[in-house]
Length: 211
Ligand code: SF4
Image (cartoon, rainbow, N blue to C red; front, side):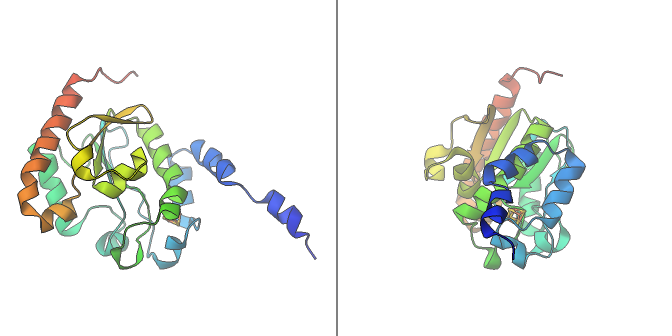
């Protein structure tokens, strides 16, 4: 029978896997995400949801995970929360698909729409990192605590992360509320408007993207 030690030695480590993903182009990334089973979320998905939008976008919005409707349709931020995100984009003269790319921390739907577990987010982050490298956005917007803390590390509250410009892998990042949270907490919409203004002002102050 096979020597389990040889099998273990041949299995790719997390580092090897991340290195393989770092060399992927878009078609390879699409194929890899579609068949990925690197975490338990693969078992409950209808399909993996890579992201949507302009792959040359200057703006990149990052949420936490696909929900039931996203899992069915294969697109992030559809349904009520998606419509609110579209309104948020319109408030700063942006439109889905035009100079905007939208993705999530994990590509597969967590059961019952729970938050992704740290190991699930950790397994999926190499895909998001590669998306960011390929898109080269000038500004990231983290939508909600799950997105913000998985990108920045730590366990800070949204309240403490809002109102400043952070950095993820060298790209400036602004943090605001997740649209699904805003649907349940309408008074905080005013704060999200402040965050969008900060994002717009930050973008205006950034140097042009080098070719
Ligand atoms: Fe793979 Fe990410 Fe889906 Fe987990 S959530 S199975 S790491 S694509």
